[in-house]
View (tube, rainbow, N blue to C red):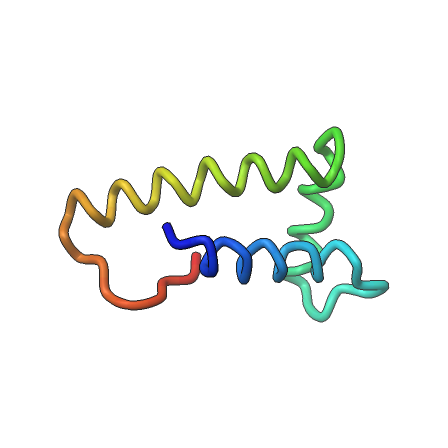
Length: 70
């Protein structure tokens, strides 16, 4: 994955952590799940693992097209 792509996605996650109020129920539930982790860094590490697995699956399936957000 390109560094620019990782930076954008990490920036979005960081912005979620910095919000005072979640924008919707999805963000609220996400933040509740992240609260069970040791710290925010653990969330970034888990996200990196998921991103890697998704990218491997997409490359394997040869269905990678443009930007994909999951």
